[in-house]
Image (cartoon, rainbow, N blue to C red; front, top):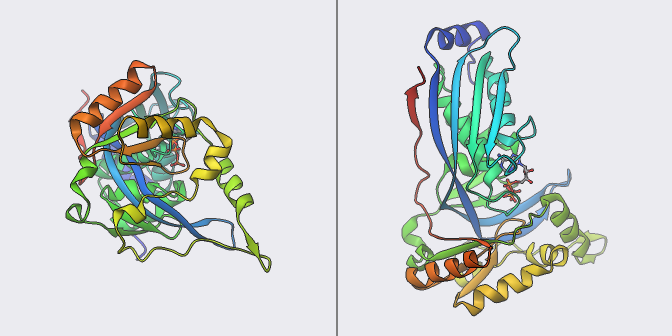
Length: 321
Ligand code: ATP
């Protein structure tokens, strides 16, 4: 359904009449418990089949929206710590804000501050989650909110993982990221409450990992051979595999060492998330997971003991004045 969009003057003037408003939005991370590449569209986008879950690791966005002063930039962005993500128009939160304001026709001043808790380039989806959090926040603030289905379409224009973060619950992801089927928490094993996520300190470029993966595909009769998509009814054990891991490991050999380290500390299973470079291990007991995360941190490696969240937390709003 095509939404009826308010005109520029309608939405801006209604918003600008109000005082500046500040919203606080937690943007959660994710892990891909399993990730298969099941094919490629003619436009070169990869078709995915992935069980994705939000986890308890967060960025925190603070968005202040108010009337725009003549000559002032419409969107400003800063990150803490300063180098954790780009503080310019390449930041996905900036791009999400520009897309939303452009399509709805809002002419506002937006100040976005992102406290990064999710390592960038680790396959934990931090940038995509910041983009989704920005869309949610602006839609919550807007006098004429956009329907969820339209917002999900806009999210896909920002990146394959952005619709998942708008949805914010465990899901089976298909297509190029736009197909999301709910996965109930009760269908996931309770051991997933004892996860350790680890980032090796060096991010990987998603494009490079996919490029390496494409180069490694077997070609039969001029066609690339992909693994068949899973029926989605196998055990979690069968699910726990990432097709991109060999490609990522060939780009960053120290992932092998990281995987060995997680296993040596007692992880039952260890899998890379997204296009890397982050990994997660699954423990049977929360205490053991916390001890393993502390072991990595004591050696200067970013690690968190965490678990799945059923639903990403809501937005907090208040008046900035
Ligand atoms: P993917 O969703 O492709 O798996 P990722 O989780 O590996 O991505 P992100 O944390 O989303 O990685 O960051 C990937 C790149 O995007 C970074 O190298 C960074 O330069 C850029 N980026 C843009 N906006 C952000 C943001 N808000 N936070 C982190 N990185 C961002």
